[in-house]
Every structure is written in C-alpha cells, then in structure tokens.
Image (cartoon, rainbow, N blue to C red; front, top):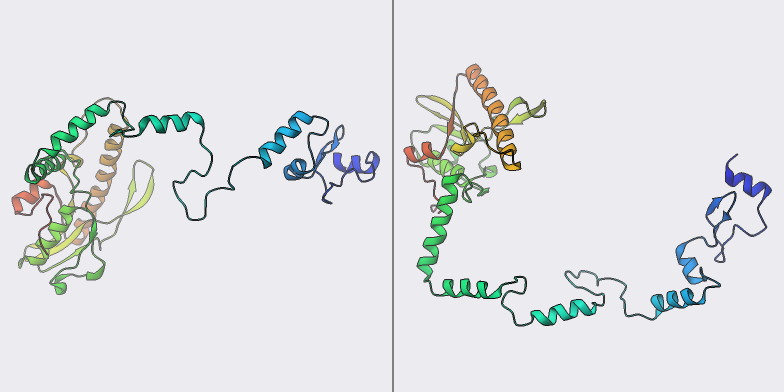
Length: 293
C-alpha cells in the first residue's frame, strides 16, 4: 500500500482532496496530506497566501496591475515587449548619437572610418585581394571554403550525373573546368568513388569519397585536392584546441589515403594528392576570382 492509499483509507477528511475548481489536489505525504490547491494557477486565483494580506496584495498587483504583455507578438523577432528598467533606459539615452555604442572608445572607430573613406575603390579592392591571398597561402583560405553546384559544357565526358556535381572549394571548381576543357581527359567524375576505411580516432568504419576520378591515355587517376598544410604532419607546439584539431585531421586524412592507395592497387589506378603547388604547375588557377563559365 502506498502512502497516498494509506492516507486515503485512514486519515482523509471528506472533500480534502478536491480543489475549489473541482480537480483533485496533489499529495504531499502522510504528515502533510494534500496540497491546498491542484495547481499554481488555482493557488494564485483563489488565494494561496490567505492570512498574509501584504503578500496577497503584492501578488494581486503583480498579476493584474502591471504593464507586462503576454509575450512577443506572433512572428516578431528582436522585439522586447517587456518594460525596460531605469538603468537600461539610461544606458540607451547615454548611447544616443554615438558612432559605435558597443565600443568604449568611439573616437578610435571614427578615426578608422575616416581613414577608409579617404581611400579609392581601387585601393580598397587591392587591400581586400591582398588579405584574401594571404589567407589562401596560409591555408585559412576563403577561396578553399567556396561551395556550389557546377554543370560541365561537355557532359559526354562526365561518367556520373552531370546535374549533381558539387564543388566544395574554389580549387575543386577550377579542376572541374580543367577536366571539362582539356582534350587529353577522356572521362572524369567527381565524388563517384566510395572507399570504406576505419578511422583511428574513433575506431569506426566510415565512407571516403575522393574528389575526382579521371582517365587519360596514360591511365586512370584518383585525385584528392587538399591544401599543402593538411598533407604534412603538424609541428609540435602548445596543445591548443586548434593544434589538436589539426592532428586529428591529419590522422584521419592519412587513414583515408592509405585505403585509397590500396584501392587503386587493386583497380590498377594511380592515387595522387593535388595541393595548391600542384595546381599552379598545371596552370590551374588558385586565386579567389572565379573565371567565367
């Protein structure tokens, strides 16, 4: 017999377990019996704090005599429908008219703004291009993270679905253009080969999709396009989060490529890793500007 059953059988007073609203109340324990109300809303509505007029009046004022809304309007975003405190209103008033209200030193921001306003569009474009090229050389590349769909002009050379080609970096897109326009390439495909491998980082079996498979008169080649820094073992340094990520990426890539080499030996293919240095020797662009299709 549970404590509630024991209480109901021997200690329950008639009507004690029924709330004012008609629903059954919650049960505390054998010593305390049933709660005063079935829910918080009933406790608020029918006076949970009877006998304490101060708290009861405060609750009444809080629930009825305020300007709080019932929440944000449907479909609204970034709208604070609740009343702001005096401190928040004062801070907003102090920030009025400042160029950079989020910055504690707006004079520095305004000085930088004036410096950029004096430069011509050509100078700004040159600075941005130089910054982007520096990122690419260091392997941080905005261009390498470029993604999108691409359709070849010569669809007969493509051995997969030409409507489902996806490039995951600017370098891959330029390699696709090279394959499509080069007469020496008899056929090619992108991410159509699947190689299963076991990753040492989690000891699980994964699927590896090499970037390209193409055929020439010399044979068939399986290609992976990667920045040079991801093909070499990271140099030992302080164990930061970035360093650990680089090490795990290197170990994972090594496992992929070892299985790719074994796969190519069985098929009679040649596995190669093309970095930015390889692309430059082949005349394939590695810059940030996409050539016209």
